[in-house]
Picture 1: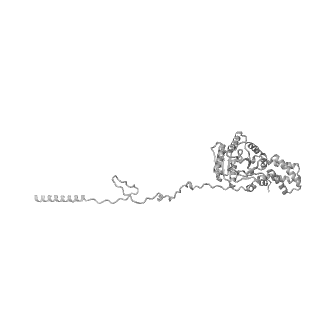
Picture 2: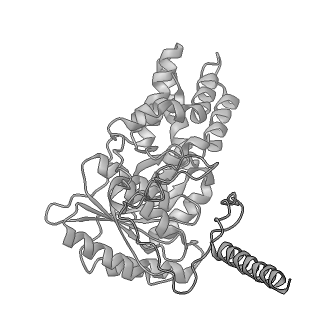
Picture 3: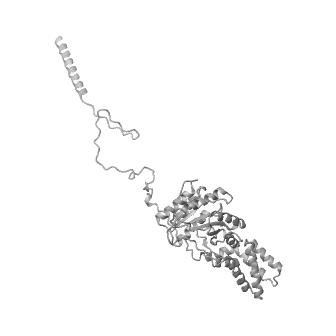
Length: 403
């Protein structure tokens, strides 16, 4: 009995031991790996830990930013480079209108404001009876046009004599009669050439003078165009140092026709600028030097004395060939007062009448010539760059009396 119990116990122990071995063996086996998780596209990429080796870079060509299309944006466009200094073209030099016959071409513009004088005279002369009252009306018409007292008396006397001899007076005869008398007063045998070509030297020297507001600087610039149009080379002297914009204005006129401008500091010595301009003109070998002076009021004695100084300093180089006085035709008899004072300071050799198209007082041409004993050489007939014309007596008188 005891033997049977002992055998059962041994059998149970043996079975227990065998079961433990089986369980232990099963626990030692590795578990299968878990299935891979779905990637999280919103999570940032995992950064390498310390000790992890970076991936070896691949040898691929890098693309420029112009080659990369940004999401949702337009295709990149090529950026144009700004033009270089060499690519910017300088403004071209203008070719002025030829001066030959320029006043004839501008005759219509002149006649629009001037022929009231001629038409008024022709109307009076056409009356059947020319009594003393009619002749007084003719005198008043001439005086209103600023012909001047003495020239008016001469014109009326000449007309009375011619009409008495003529007898019958057709419109054509009256026009011819009036034209002849006016030409006699204006003068057809006077040399009206602007002297710019001295025989023994270069350059010719021209000084432009006048009071404020007559268009003196503009006239100097336009005169440069006249000379260039006639084939001359020009240097401009900006001796008007008192008006801030005068030098800039003159330089702009010069650049348009290729003329060099000599200028000095603002409020500097005008005589020094004029001296340097003539010096530069000599060294450059140009044909003409034009000197623009300050627009002085004729009542300012000190300023007028300075104008005389400019003239003396310039003449250390060479004598002046021309001194042109610029007068505003609309000022009438007041312009004669200005002319008289300027003539006392510098020797005026010619007159430039500006704004002649804006006044019906064309008789100032006759009056100022009689006052100074020097001819009108140039007339301004508008604001255009080529509206400065050499004065031609025949074309002027034809504009006065109309067609």
